[in-house]
Every structure is written in structure tokens, then in C-alpha cells.
Amino acid sequence: MNSVTKYACAKINLYLEVGNRRGDGYHDLTSVMQCVDIRDRITLAQSPGAGISLTTDSRRIPADNGNIVCKALEAVAGEYGIRRGMSVFVEKRIPISAGLGGGSADAAAAINAADELFGLSMTAERKRELGARVGSDVPFCVEGTPSLVRGRGEIITPIRGLPPCWIVLAKRGKGLSTRIMFENLDAGGRRPEGKNPDDILTALESGDVGKIGAALHNSFHPYVLNLHRESAGIYNVMKKYGPAGILVSGSGPSVYAIFPEDGRARECFRELKKQGGDVFLCRPIS
Ligand code: C5P
Figure 1: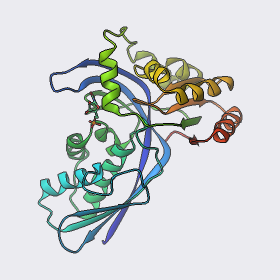
Figure 2: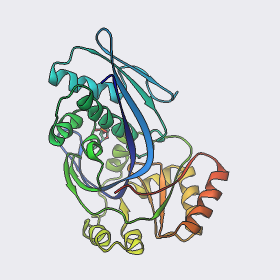
Figure 3: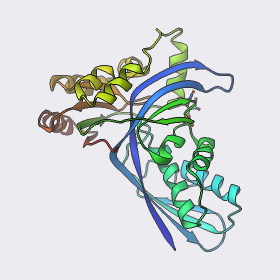
């Protein structure tokens, strides 16, 4: 086998409650993550010589060893004593610094590709463990099935995800740094105790898009809408179309709206698309 291609899917958070800052600087999270059909494509090949080289069709991610994809491949190579060279090509469709886990998804896809290319027979647990070393969302992305995610991001419990529905997702303006958004949350002092995830989990079990929309929650949501004018604008457009729910994804600034049917979703998509930026009409992946 000379090369392996894997797809990397964007995630949205249906629920994200940020707990206390821990001694190691990270925060304890309770999160519900769901993949949607916005995909990057990762192609990994063996190459002559040693080392890892990365090329990409995007001008907005590092094309060197600073890329999280290289860090993930270095972790695999170190663990399995792989000395052969690797070249990786990243085709980027997921918006960057958007709260959609694009870098983490690429890193997870690279781990899955290396497993196959070198016949490593890694267990999912092993992949998650290696993934956690390079980014908090990577363990979820290894399999990408709808999950309740806890701890720093490494405790994953598969759950029933979104039923078939339509999601309008938009990101406009400057990206946001996850680290800085966590710092903003901390600087805001004590936050009101968030809801627990029971409501969203019960709503997902029911398969009722209306109930799911009403249970969406994200600790970052009010901060992002306050800070990021373009996201507030997107939110206001989405609201006009009466979706089941609207939420900022992750630490922002992407905003998504969930619709049970495609009619108003398409109209909402068309209006946002006219205004520019990254706009998608997408579906959940189960
Ligand atoms: O792990 P990752 O590199 O994706 O995290 C980016 C930044 O987000 C971290 O440096 C940290 O500041 C913050 N973070 C956090 N708690 C988490 C995950 C991320 O504080 N559970």
C-alpha cells in the first residue's frame, strides 16, 4: 500500500458546559459532540528518506511541522518506532479557528491513516490516547460517533446523536483562539451553574428535533455573541427563519441553526450565503 486517504469531519457541540480550571491549566468539560458532513481530506503516503512533510491546498494552515497533523504523525512514529518518511496532503474545507474541531479532525484522520498505511492494528483506545497528546478534541474525532465527552476531552461515551435534520452553519469574520476564549470565560468570574446534560440527552433519545433545539447549550455562546459582531449578525438572520435551535459551536465563532425540514433551512442558507463568509447547509453524520 502506497497511500491512504481518510476524511476528517467537522464537529458541532450540541451542549458544552465548561467547568473549573484545573491545576494543569485545562478545564473540565461536559460536552455533547456531533459530526456533520463538512469534510477535509487527508492523504498519507510513504516517502523516501526520513521525516514528515506536509502540503496543503489551504493558505491558512501551517505547511510545516507546526501543523497538528505532523504532531499526531510524530506521536505515532515515536510510539511504533517508524523511521520511514511520510508525506501528507491536507485538503481543507472545514473553516479554521471556528469552533468546528477541524485541526483535531485532521489529526485524528492522520492517526487512522498511519494505522492503515503501516498495518499497526491500533485499538481505538490507543488512538485516542495518542490523539489526546496533541489536542483535547482529537480523542472524539478518532471515531467521530455522537458522544458525551468529559474530562479534558478524553472521556468518551457514545450516545444517540441527531436524527436526520438540516443544519445551517456559518462563520464570518476573524477566527477565535480557543485558548483566549477559555481565558475570557475565566476572567468573567463565577458563571451561573450550567444546566446538566440530562435535557439534551433525553431530547436526543426522543429523536424530536424541536426538543433537541430547546435543550442546546454552550457556556461560550453569550461571550461569542458579545465579542464577535459578525456572529451576532448571523444569529439574527437565523432567528428570522424559526429554527428549532441556534447555538455557537465550541469556542466560536461558528454559529449553527437546526431545522427539522429543508425548506426554511434552504432559505436561511441562501440569505446567509449572499452575505458572504463560510456558509454551509449540512446534515448530521450518525
Ligand atoms: O487541547 P487544545 O490544544 O485543543 O486546547 C487549546 C487550548 O484550549 C488549551 O491550550 C487550553 O488553553 C484550552 N482548553 C482548556 N480546557 C480544555 C480544552 C482546551 O482550557 N478542556
